[in-house]
Length: 201
Image (cartoon, rainbow, N blue to C red; front, side, top):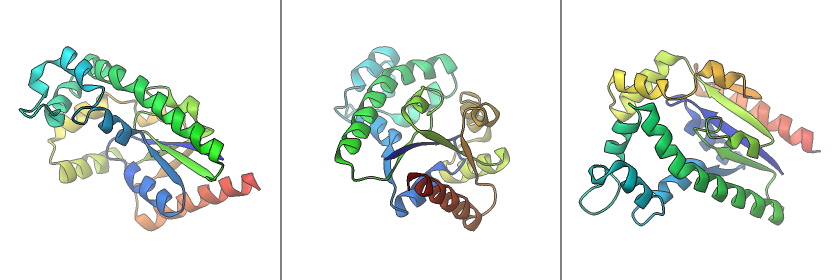
């Protein structure tokens, strides 16, 4: 079984790559999904978040106001690190537990750890190799403005609080360019999957 780390900056199209990998039979461990479960109503990360950020980031029903919290942390690198510190340790533990379970079962050939902060939080050390999804900056900005209705400056602030593509390139084993079209994107992914499968023979 090979464990592949998949990451990419906001708006790069990492989710599109992850979805295609799932279609191709790869087992996806979604770090964002695990994190959302931790911060869902009743999740174990809510109380530490309340202690550090106050009641203002919660809705009347006690659930987390993700938009409000996002507007706070993505404009303040120190607060972002505090939030990441609350959730990262638990996410890594749960991820490693799932990887070990899959190894014990021996049913999966390729397991993909889909994690936007793969490099930032040290999860790259949990993988056999790491793939980086990249895209031209302006294209990323336009995607996020269209998809999430965010203002340009808000997007730039979020990007500034993540490692740059240049920094990530130094840590990645393979790069997937998502600046063109789906046909070319899928072709790159197919070649990577084929290589991994051939290495296992």
